[in-house]
Amino acid sequence: MSTLSKARAYDVESFWKNLTNHPQFKLLRAPEIGGVMVRGRMGAQGDAFNLGEMTVTRCSVQLDTGEVGHSYVQGRDR
Image (cartoon, rainbow, N blue to C red; front, side, top):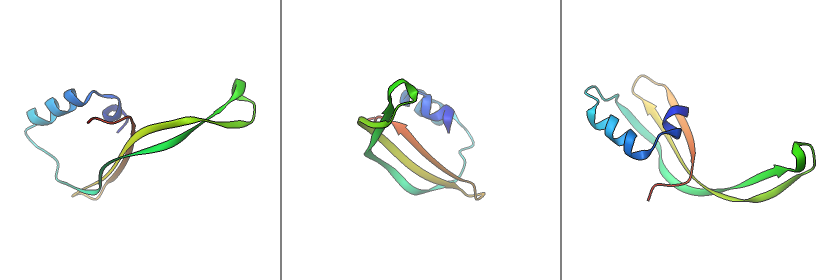
């Protein structure tokens, strides 16, 4: 998931189209866009404070073999 979250959408789509044996999966939670509050600390030691909001996309899938994956990615692709 980490590698996929850092890849460009175009590269992932291109790889998926060229893949001959697609894993079977079902969406537990379809990709959806939302926001999260980003927290920070002054000097990494001070009291926590709200830095601001950030757009994220989240999704959950389950492979037919039973493995479940959840991912949050910064930003959106629309």
